[in-house]
Length: 432
Ligand code: GDP
Image 1 (cartoon, rainbow, N blue to C red):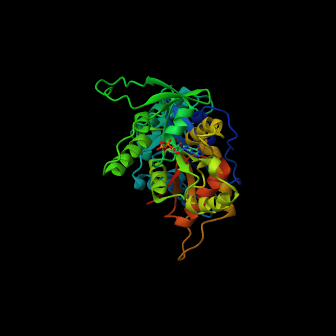
Image 2: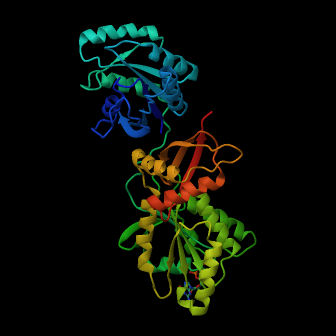
Image 3: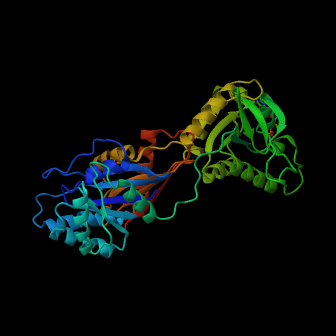
């Protein structure tokens, strides 16, 4: 999600402008000399385009050199921004502090939109034209308080944002797509037979792709699901040489086509390398994951003891996967499958509002800052959620993070927001 930073002297009306942009009255604190505000990001939207607005309130009223203070503030905001809104007070005109900030902004080579705020009426709006002298191009006269000119400003922001990525997050309505995967003989067909498998083939509307209707609709827990590559489960695809290779391709294809995968394991046998490979395929694909331990009817107290240890050892890399102990043969816990699938999908599509995410993050890095290594300790400036399915996060930092610290952040993120049954991705964007 692109980032718009709002920069300017105290009392030019930055918070009011942010409120105007995000379109709701929020507890954005006004600039009060003597009150230091941190950079706070908010979610905003205009004409269907979403972006993050960072309110740069952090102002050091005690700073000896006011020009240096505002320059430092501008600099920090600007490195992480895609577009900068530089706000000046149209009633006051440009000041030497404004001019110092402009120098910094021009060096950054980021697109800057000059906002002449407090242009509450025509005559102030006329005077705002004198701000051309700042050398930032045409000033946009707005009244953040009354809304005057804010539509034009938002249009200008959209025009300055980088191209929208072609991600369509609104999935089409219809059954959720599930892959049922696992090595031979774990009980995939047996489990499939538990569900009222309607042989209504899902015919793809794209011409030429209807030769092999490999998916079918099945009822699981009173809900219709699209089981991908059902044909691969029903047909006994030969036992000739090379089968494993093709079976593995088929498994990979099914996982790619699905939103959530059920990996079936045989509880009566040790977790094998092939099981591990299939689990890796799912985690690498970024799909939601439910692990079902089938043949639970064969698990006695002895086996249970060893199985628990084995699970701890073999599945320690994916503690977030949802787990079920079931039996396709007796029907044990088969009714738990649909709720598990729904839970995993809900985690997979979770979106945390930017403000909430950063409130949590601020508290986290305050309590446990990045350790100093070799004399440096990078800071996390803020985070945004870049997407869902699976949830993807971007951390804006002052430098690369330790792998260990990044894992810590991920673990804490999971503790806070859940995500059971879903992988999450975290990427770090250190400022240049
Ligand atoms: P697939 O290759 O994964 O489709 O596995 P199948 O469904 O063909 O099952 C392999 C074997 O395991 C068959 O003999 C099944 O009867 C048996 N089986 C499947 N599920 C269970 C279960 O929950 N408990 C027990 N005891 N046997 C099972």
